Length: 122
Image (cartoon, rainbow, N blue to C red; front, side, top):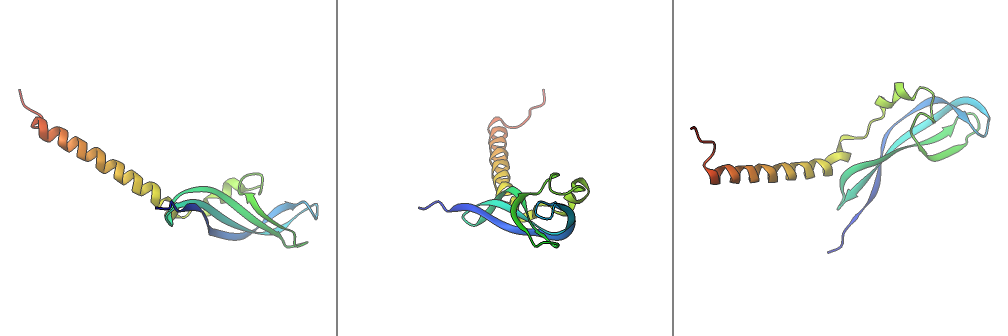
């Protein structure tokens, strides 16, 4: 059976921010599109891998793709990072694995207490 896996992307959001353009050599407004890269197994999103930004300068038109979305990109990163969160469905694989592990632990505990007769009073 083939093992189908890989990375996928999803758009988180877009907005305009003041950034330093390397072509214009000036602080200018740029359209920033933030995307989430996540790892998927059999088309089920497993976990987020990275958050990247595609930037287009509105002054000169320079396009930069695949930049890391961090404090080096925009000056007010700490204020805007909560606006661009990974989508909830990027964590489905981790949630499924946690549920399976929890069920296994509950089954082991149930079998342990059912074999010993539970807690006994002295």
